[in-house]
Length: 372
Image (tube, rainbow, N blue to C red):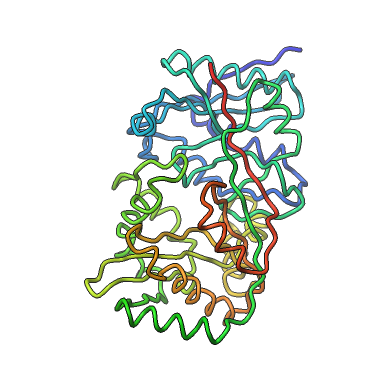
């Protein structure tokens, strides 16, 4: 079998790299197409500030004139400095069900990583924890959130056959939303009064802008010990604020600050856009914006995208306040189910929180590792 591996360099090749999953998953009712322009921007140094501290290459695999796979490889120097290891990572891997194709892709990434002086490779991981990460290994019959991943069942075995083993898993839950007990509501008010906390509510996206950098400063503090986490620079914060602010529903965002106006915690939910993204097929125009707008207004499913609490205040009931305040909005808007985004399996405190709800743990993603 002849498979050509071609480095992605030109704008045309970047588009081919981005479009390949649209061909691969065509007709699959569970795959969520990402926004094409966002995906293209993430691969360009002129658009993505992660290239300030990451070195990367991307390739496509071609057989009989058709693209049959893709892969990226990167060195995140800030991550390596933090963990004092020589890691490379593979990223955005997609491939047809063919062992030769996936081996050629991984060999290409591994060879480049080794030439950069690295002795381990893990992945799939992205430029940051807010980027694509993990291979789906459980939950193939559930619709993911737009912040999660979907892959075919054969991915796991094909990657393992190339010498990879488990490094760590992420878990995802589906929660059933019910009325808040009066006891929980009373406790919520007691906590706010005791610690002089103020809950910040939003009605417009513009109102959230001034809190953007405060939230990312808190992410840097509260997520510091989470697997793969690297401090987000001011430029990276701006990149993600611009990327995500436009699709957030402000009513589903809650923050808590103390009497000194310090943001101590936040929770970000939103009506599920999974079906809307499927209808939009990666584009806001001509009708993608309409599908998204309708999903924002009327939905029975919400996604819980991100929660963060200052490490010094996690025992003061702030997580409970945030969850209760968001749950009020969920109930007011007819939400019956919540999809959590991936939580690393070692974060038992967060996992235990969701186990207090009626729930199923229905999806699992995996990061693999291999010594070179």
